[in-house]
Length: 378
Image (tube, rainbow, N blue to C red; front, side, top):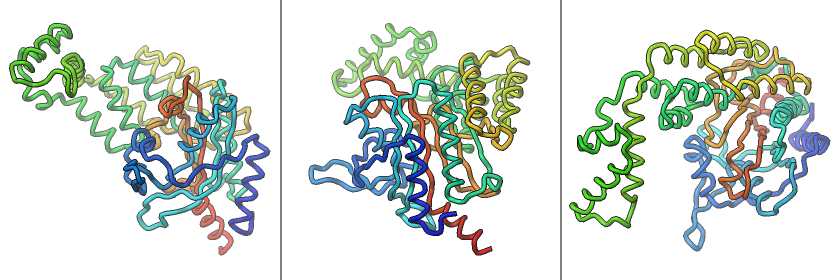
């Protein structure tokens, strides 16, 4: 085990270099909008915000993923490429310092997603071992947002409901509340909508609905060129009605809840999922193939699937994740020592000309040092 924080950091730098990750320097003061738009409420509310001289929103660096990706886009570097980092991040934390050190790797542009995912998990676990943490002392938890989305599609939920449930993935209380709403009904969600507008929206008569909304806006003296157009309002109302009136029957709801309750060794998860979906004749298609292929890649990367728990309801409360998510923590602890996942949509949101597959992980070095020091004292 490295004897000091500096030694631990240098050991990680060396490991990252051997894994083909080049150090990436990023500014400490960053534009706030990328975080406000993509990071999710759990991170947004903990950011230290300020304003620049021109009135622009700025923040102290709350993580490295977004600035590393923005740097790559600005430089137009070749792909695939792996970046490493180690430095201060700034977040409001109850009972903890507002600044602490994170380290990690961002893996951009690797088209073989299974290989890149497995490499991220393997490198994250190797990083903990480099810091003196025994893998036998850890709970390693893996989830898959892509598989959750595939189940929602297979159940035939309206797109609006799918988006709503996806936004709650990783937030157990919010997900439970959304499922309860989906089983109960609108309960006044459409109150105040004129019956004739409601009928057209139910029938998905977008053209007629747009014309009627335009007439109503003109009668009320509302300008047609400020705010949402009649067509946009019509499309939004059609979606709102579909979402409000969608029901998940007892059978599909039980299937979804049974899926979300899966919590087993990763090596057993494929059979559990295939058995569950087979009982109702649902095919998860490419998402299931990707899940199984990633398991094979993890085994090839020397990750013991018996020591990894697959938890179907497990997500990380950051909005930009799209597939694999994982964490490792001390057995019985709540706070992760390392966490990461796949974020294939983030690069285009940040300005990349074409989609770029991406996956990465971050280490909480203060937590890791605390665990190491407590074991030394024992």
